[in-house]
Length: 428
Length: 80
Image (spheres, rainbow over the protein chains, first blue to last red):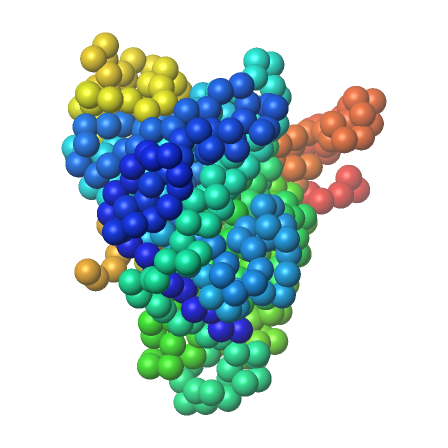
């Protein structure tokens, strides 16, 4: 499966009377976008705002972040959720609006939605402090059940991203990158002397607003399966979760999975990147046992020499991480784990909830319990009303002027457990 | 907490869903619970059935509490 990913660099967003791209600027028809969002009768109000890098702006509570993309060779983005499922997912040509994001914002769904600061000390920890952000601020109807509100917010973001992606359909990309993974026997034969490496991608699937969707299927209902990495670049996986902000894998991060990016960079040089094994993190022990068994079986069946494993969230998913590690190692495939750490405010607690003897190689993405002082900002997109109860905050942590102190956990993607951050143990 | 209480010579039964974590932290008597969102019961089966599940697990725990063990033991069944 081969995908050409054309990237159109977006340097600014402006509101205009129609939606188009010209001279690296994305012009957005505000009324059209707001009307699109309000097609959903679960949402009462919607307004758009633009947040640019360097501005004294705080965005919170953030639900998801999405990069607008469009399929230009047949097929549709976010298959099974927005677009139709088709064999074109992960193949052909896709255009992306590089450096520009849709950010969904609004009253909290759970307590696990985070903060993006466009400048100041917290901006160093967040990738979306450096992107041009179109913030979609939504107001739900009174009395909506939480999961209904979550779905409305999730769909609003994906719809807007798909709408904006259309603007890139006929624009010549600044760069085109080509990614290719062949069917298993051909791929193994292409680089017979290089170690065969796979990526075990654990999706958050604890339920109760901790969900991820694979072609529209709730990830807690899947059993481990194989994916071509390029399917993910076309939105085959979307985030629906309210996991702790710091290690939330937003839909943007699925599109930009750094493990997949890096494996492709090494593909044909020092590794033979064979593809992705997709699995989940369910809340029943029988699921954890069954799915880690199946992951190990897939590694053996694919003849993998080594795998990288990432998780989403922390706590009981650490057990899925370790069960996968133990069983895959015992099946004869070497494992490197990638995760973040939570050693408590004093740094004295065990930084993972579980461990195993086979876990001998681990790349850390930093720890989420360290605290930071967040200065007051000139502008708030969303509301500061919930800072004290958002993960990383505490009673009394916020001051009257809007400044507050909180753990790094409150910042979107600050310790994201796939390494898409600056706290990861990697070279720059 | 399990280890902290046992340090004072009081035996503990750890009832939990994720048995591997219980093993890692060093619990000595472990009873696998139903699931993380509802360890002692199962709301999908209605209140009466859920109560029965809870009663059975608690009875098992009380029995396990009285049994001397010399290594980490997982009580998966009632007959021990």
